[in-house]
Amino acid sequence: MIKNITPDILYIGVDDRGIVKGLDADFKFFTGASNFDNQTAKDKFDRRFRDNVNNWLGQNANAKINAKFIATEDDKTYYHANIEPSQDIVYYNTEAYIRTGSSTRKVDDIKKFQQDRPEQYQRIIENSNK
Image 1 (cartoon, rainbow, N blue to C red):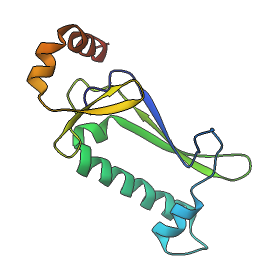
Image 2: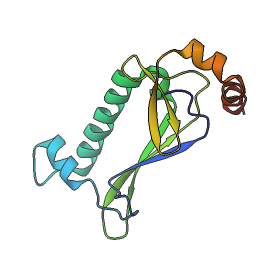
Image 3: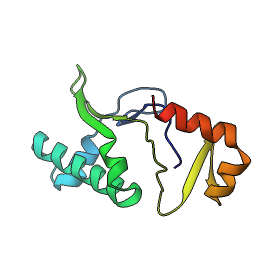
């Protein structure tokens, strides 16, 4: 990923239509039990999420995430992760990507990207410093 210039929110346990499906299946997987302790399941889920972010995107990206579990009135739990903008390029598995419309494209040469798109790159820097 390259410069998340605006805050984003990631919802896990919510479908594309915005309907909360919950994390029960994930909690069962992480605890290995159908009758799981909710706090233990949440701890394991959060730890796995954080470990994956740390392993794939790095410690700095992990530090930009403020996440919490939210329970609905009908007792379904979802994961709400606020992702702060980054002033640095965040690499995914040693590669950089840029979001263009609804697609994500690999940036083959960061320096060339900076040179070919100076206005876009400057906007990224300016927005990340706000």
